[in-house]
Image 1 (spheres, helix red, strand yellow):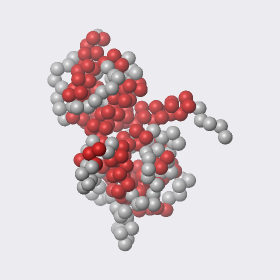
Image 2 (cartoon, rainbow, N blue to C red):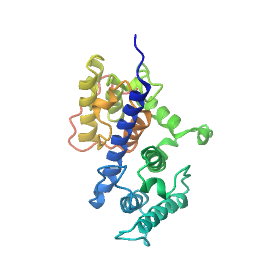
Image 3 (cartoon, rainbow, N blue to C red):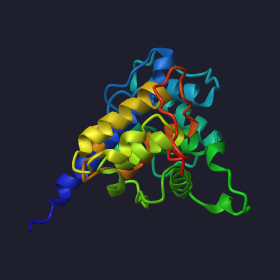
Image 4 (cartoon, rainbow, N blue to C red):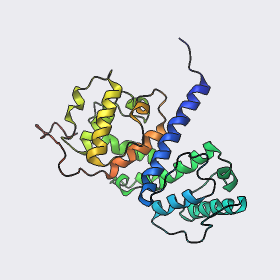
Amino acid sequence: MESEDPTAVDAEWKRIQQNTFTRWCNEHLKTVNKYIYNLETDLCDGLLLIDLLQVLSHKKISKYNKKPTFKPQKLENIAIALKFIEDENIRLVNIDASDIFKGMLKLILGLIWTLIVKYALSLPYLDDGDDGGDELITPKQALLRWIQSKIPSQVPMTNFTKDWNNGLAVGALVDGVAPGLYPDWKDNDPKDALLNAKEAMKLAEDWLGVPQVLDPTDMVNPNLDELSTMCYLSAFMKAKLKPGAPTKPCVNGDNTK
């Protein structure tokens, strides 16, 4: 059996992560009618990054170059954005304004991930432990624990990669968050991975307001990027069932964990 080309695997997770993180940014930027097409190039003048930070933080950044034309103005904008991030108590590692200006993709993805951790994963929904020790767990551990509390114990759930590949876990989560919304996930065939993921993620988007920042085809990809999965799943924590949702009645508590 041939082993996978490491270069191809690296390119695959990076593609998935770039697409997912771009969609996550755009979900927030659409509230101010802005859009990122390419993370490598569209942040180079700092304007979209500043817009994103203002939306995420609900704070105003007042002094920056509104119409940067020259390189120093663009670099200054990016520096202002990075300074704002640090003032928000977000630790930045090995990135400066010139990296974003030059479109260093891996570093930009790392920056967006720090924003996801701060504004999507560091939520009170995860801080519901009663043993007093949960302050030491990582956002990854906290999210995994939260998901495990929502889905049946017979569904394997130890990671954010292969356990999601057959589309059953996301179906179980949809029904766990909104009992009766997708009880049929139990009847799905694990071999129909893409269909399973599409159905569950469409229900989550339509009735729970969980945007498909992760594409269903990427969820069932063996090279699924765990940070992309966490980014997508974080929206379930604050999901609320919309009125008129096609829920089915629970039978003998069958839709509860």
